[in-house]
Length: 392
Ligand SMILES: Cc1cc2nc3c(=O)[nH]c(=O)nc-3n(C[C@H](O)[C@H](O)[C@H](O)COP(=O)(O)OP(=O)(O)OC[C@H]3O[C@@H](n4cnc5c(N)ncnc54)[C@H](O)[C@@H]3O)c2cc1C
Image 1: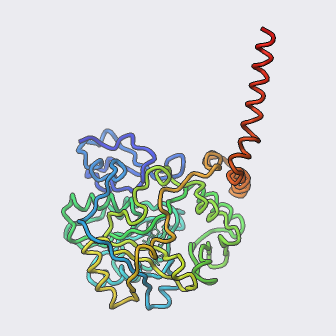
Image 2 (image 1 turned 90 degrees about the vertical axis):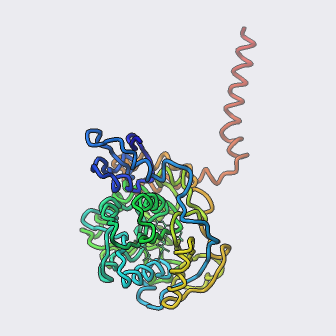
Image 3 (image 1 turned 180 degrees about the horizontal axis):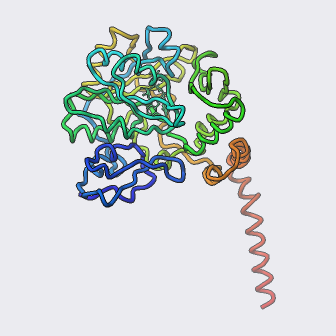
């Protein structure tokens, strides 16, 4: 019983709001730029469902049976799909395969007019196309997740925290047999305040933004951290793109990404986990390779069927997880400065410049920091003490 009233800085997965029969919960964007639930106490009947489905409230992960994970490297045989998707296009192919078997795919798209990533329901392959490619910001799942109906079959794709909560909701609805869950290795999500500043900067250069592609393999998969806007503006991480600098340097991730991500390695509530298979094994591949993990019996048997449709080769945990984060992100020295300044009217380029300056101090070995900063203070205190003792 109870409610998630007062929950702050959570995963923002939206499952509490989607599962609330009284529509007493809505997802708002908190002052740091992340989704968070807001409870209308007049509507809340303290039924406790929102607490029960919330992954953030517990330490455990809702797994669907014990199973020895199976690892694969894979890619789509469709050159266009492989080129457009972030890694090897396995996520898209699994969704396409299931749509043909009467599943509905609940996937993430980007809405340019709202400037936000949003989950939506794809019933056809044409509709599924809007899910292609990662959108590296937190997605609003509320509308799509609240559409689950017990008589239909679904594939749900999302971040590991979204999937852990939705697994809890699916279990409550006794829909385990009709839902397949797929998550991905997740770096974390950056603040929407940063995203808004980034958009403002790009709009200042090219005007209204109608289309954004977050990864682009024009120069190959390994250099695919690229923002391609309206098909003409191209900004690469390798050449200092501001969004990717802020995101990949962990300067403004959501608080739980630093403090409470329980989903690193293959810790997951999903049936299948996918990701970019970076690492030595495919270091020379420039078309894109997906790391794929079958995490449950259901996930593994779907992958066995998929092996007739896509390229899937057996791999190992060492290869698939080689370049994935092993633990929560670490706040850089610039974190507090960045979060404070994202809230005010300061351009992203200035925040980036100052953050880089602050981070330079991280590079200084701690002995030099001691002699440069701590020792002079200690000497000053000692001299003061000597003078005081002498005078008394
Ligand atoms: C915020 C974020 C962090 C990530 N971090 C890592 C990482 O550290 N390591 C790694 O290997 N891979 C990471 N990925 C996953 C990776 O970028 C690819 O999405 C994955 O390899 C699948 O690629 P694909 O080629 O199969 O198909 P794609 O077409 O790229 O698949 C995209 C799928 O991801 C879903 N999706 C896209 N954006 C979001 C979003 N914002 N929220 C929820 N679901 C979304 C879509 O619904 C679609 O089903 C991350 C993705 C996101 C969105």
